[in-house]
Image 1 (cartoon, rainbow, N blue to C red):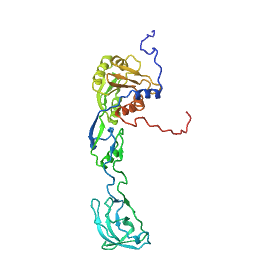
Image 2: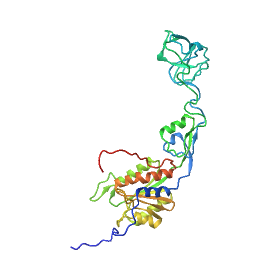
Image 3: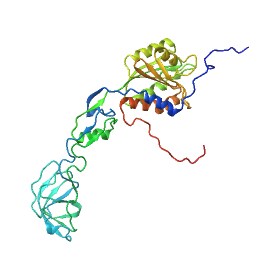
Length: 353
């Protein structure tokens, strides 16, 4: 039997492969940054991107306070840096949230961590270093004492008008807590990006269904949606579509009408069943689609209407690699994240390559 010649397009002359750095620069230079903002409560701010700087309206702490459980003391001048064995009358008790009475010279007040330093007090001694009388009315300390021990001064951590969070920051739990610590209840953030996704391949089957010969489970769907949600995107998922040019064009048109970005996996190579590339070229513009890397060579980028388009390879490993190297920094820049590029670390290997 003679071999039949099949015109699959594989023998066509292709455009030169783009270097990885060149391709990434091309994508990032094409980003249109999201400028739509709204106010959200702290409860709903996690992983959102700040649209403006946050300044503190208060000092933190807002008053001199005790850094220890112990005794606040009004040291007299002749008691500073003297040998141990100094005794003090305990005249007050100040838990956190309470304001004590003015301390007379040579007197002490029982004080707890975070409580305001009473007027007159000029040092705090840890309770472990104090010997209290049986009735708690006096304490004795057996070491030299100095001024300003264990006192956190007002504004020690944050001062009024300090910028505590910068615009372009993707908020982490510690950032939300920092905003709360200065009394901020709402933050102005960029609105979430709408990212539309669909998946091509008649061989793809949803998990939970039995496989026929030649079919595989659609793992890319769950990987891509999870990665996008991890970046705090609003995902519009059309699921798996029929492997045809018409179905692919319809899916692109639906998503382009409502999304900031469209992403697919598969269909961007040179096979006759790869319909995503020709569909994007028919409805919009394809700017690049072959990268000098493996895995991940058939990566596509372009636009359909006002929506940006990124087509990842169908191979699951290639899809993940290209998402992390190209799609993630592109999305983060679209979101308004100031530090959107991937961070790299150089390490020394113990093998030849």
